[in-house]
Each structure stands twice: as C-alpha cells, then as structure tokens.
Length: 351
Image 1 (tube, helix red, strand yellow):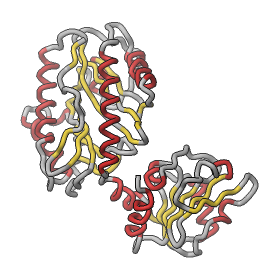
Image 2 (cartoon, helix red, strand yellow):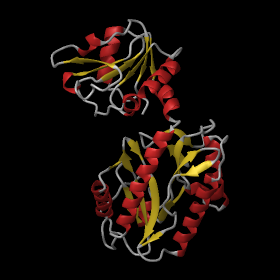
Image 3 (spheres, helix red, strand yellow):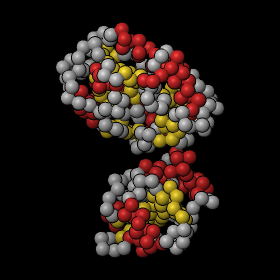
Image 4 (tube, one colour):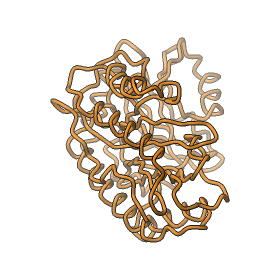
C-alpha cells in the first residue's frame, strides 16, 4: 500500500477544514499507516499537520520502525502530550473512535478553537478503493465462500443456531482467518429479525436458515448472506426468496451515475410492487472495506452518486414477523456498471 501518498492526499483534503488531523488506533490509522492495534489506556496518536508523526509507548518502537513517519515514544510515567506539536487555539479534526479521555486531555492542554469529526475527510478517501484493495477483498471473498461451502456439508437437523455459527467460525480459523463480525445465523421465525445473532433454537427441516458471514483478510472485511434449508423449502419460502433475488438482480443492473438512493429504489421497487414493501425494513446496502460498514451507503437518504471503485453490498430482504425472513447479500464494485465480486450462487442451499 502507498501509505505516503495516502497521507499527502488526506492532508490536501484537510486544508481549509482543520489545522491538524488527530487519529487513534482503528481503521483510519490502519488506512494511513498499516499499523493496527487495539485502543488502550496508553495513548497512541497519529498527528498530521505542520509535522506528521506518531506518538506511542516505547514498547511499540520496534513495531513502528518501518513507518514512513517520525515516531515519538514515551515510557510509563512520562507525559505523552508533551510530545505533541499542536498550536494553542488551533482547530482539530478528531477521529470518531478516539477515546474521550485522550480528547479531554488535548482540549485542556491546547484549547482548540474548533473540533470537527475526521469521518467526512477520511470516508471520502476510503470510499474509493484502489486496485490493490479490491484485489485483497476478492481474495478474502474466495476464502469466505470456500469456508461457507465446507460449512454447508456440516449442517444437520437438530443442531442449535449458535452451535452452527461456531462451526462456521471454526472453519474460518482452520483457514487461517478470523471473522469480520460475529456470524448472524438464525432459523425459522428468528430469521424475521435481521440482526439477531443466534440462539439455542434447533434448526428444523424445511425452514429457512439465514447465514450472514464475513472474514477479515489482510486488514479488509467481507460480508455475504445466503439462505440454507434442510430438505426442500416451503412454497412460501421459495416465493419470498424469488422476490428478494429479483430485487438483488435489479439493483445489480445499475450503472455508474446513480446515487445510493436511486440504487436502493431499484431494489425497493421490486419488493413494493410485489406487495411486501412494509417488510423491507432496512437500507439496500453499505460500503465495505477495512470496516464492515463504511461509506457509501445504498440507502434512501444518500443522494450522492456512488463513486467508481467503491465496494459495497447489495442486500435487500423481506421480514415477516413471527414467520420468517429472507435476505440475500452480494459484494459488488462500481465500475462503468456494477461488477459482482461475490461468486457464490444466490440459490437456496439444500442440505
């Protein structure tokens, strides 16, 4: 990854908005440096402005030795904020995920004239992927899809939803990857709740099983949803699946130049015209990259044109309370028209 170029680009976007960009550990820091770490009580800060540098505990010095930025380290007992070159009364663009304790310390010390969120600046850059990023995400998708196909062979009637979820996540570990989010695996009436993770409910023959899964690969996320049944699904399940599948196909026929709202409406119109509009209770899709959910959003309130080389999901659904729900989710990239990255068939998988 060309991190040096990314830093220069984000500094151009910063001009006229804030004097300094302040990031903590998380996806934005990873995007600009390749360094990843969990937030902790010792501040780790990336500062871009008059000077570009990282402030980190001494214990990270070796890990940060290949960074194309100055690294300023401190040991326990030293004041990390004394290492910051921030002019009093300047304006700061603050990472949305920065711990408040660190922000409060900087506000008390530097008395900034203005604080703005960093997300509008960072999301503008991150929503457009380069070829290397797209290639990594395609590689990750192939691993996730292979894992799913191995999982299908292990689905048995009478297993609990959570046990099946653990089986799939165990396959991820066998493949040398971790999940990008806790697997959503529900069955029967539980499938009418889009973000219910899993329960101890046993799966039964003929009912839908929703499997919403993803992995993290080389720092990037995948996200896919497919429908499984043990034995032949009911006619009603097939009917709803066909409507949702038609909605996916209609959205994926979109060409460059359409807004998130317009692509969302393509899928929504299919479902509404078949009489199930009130059961489609979420947006059609979301951007995906380092984070599972990021810009751009394929939603009724996004009037912006979806930029070329943005990667996002198409995932309409119908959810009939106390009966069942169906969702199908692909990952796609916007080129002159949408190109589908997902290779798995959208069919209902019979086991």
